[in-house]
Image (cartoon, rainbow, N blue to C red; front, side, top):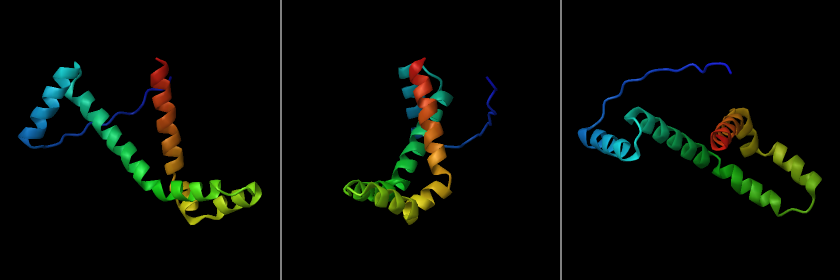
Length: 106
């Protein structure tokens, strides 16, 4: 398996947040850095969910249709769907889901 590129970042935070992260990391038996990575991934996932809400609304609307050929054409031509697909967020969500599923299999 190819090694993933890893970047290092340094951040400054308030004492209260720092102490909370340290206490929670100790409680969970993980490093503070690992807990921060989990927190950032959860934030990213929630942002993707929020950004895809218009798409979900459109998908629900299309799901009420019984004309599947028309539904497929409408989905492809829908600006929310096009924007979502064109920005590459669909691929990001698929990669994220695949990596999570791979982690569950371990």
